[in-house]
Image (cartoon, rainbow, N blue to C red):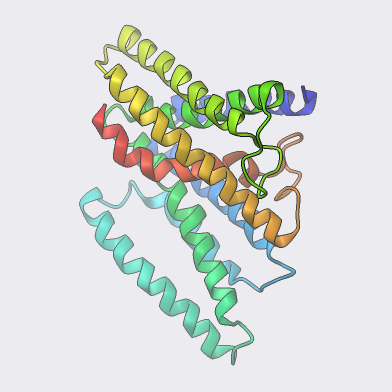
Length: 267
């Protein structure tokens, strides 16, 4: 087992717990705005040899996460639907004003990064702000962490059949074990919430949602790996010993968050 990986996880977990358990929705919003900006910085830096992303607009998009609970929820969808075409217009304006020193590839990579990181991560504080959101938000992490832990352990132990060239160390056995891990951790969370917090979350729904979120999280893991393989790097940064960068640690969480927002209402 990788000692650095385990140590980093044990040190990072209390910080996540403190923010999500004791922080109000505005603290959580600000925390994830910072996390999004850090992740986007790593993403942009990964493309430095292949493109020239419009960095400033990415940071603006990440900063907006800090304001999502200041804006009334009924206006949020309208505002987002305006901001997306506005961002595209601003990016093409950058192409025009720089006489194509900023090109279509640059703005495509920029816009993809904003959607992939800032927009997807926004759903974590959105879930946290829902009724019972302080509990529901943990399903994102039980599915992401359960998948990672079980896939890592059992993939090394019984993994025989490679899954994809994108991530050669991952096996079919590891991926299946990851789904089982997500189910088990989520069922444990449901038992705790129902027994000690007076909830009546459905165990059947928990299993179904966990399977979907685990699969989605693994797609997110492969998505991040495909980006790293394309740009020729092993990790997005060395911020977290044993884990790589912020984006390496959150690749599955990022993909899970918007799907979780839609599915957790079933509980």
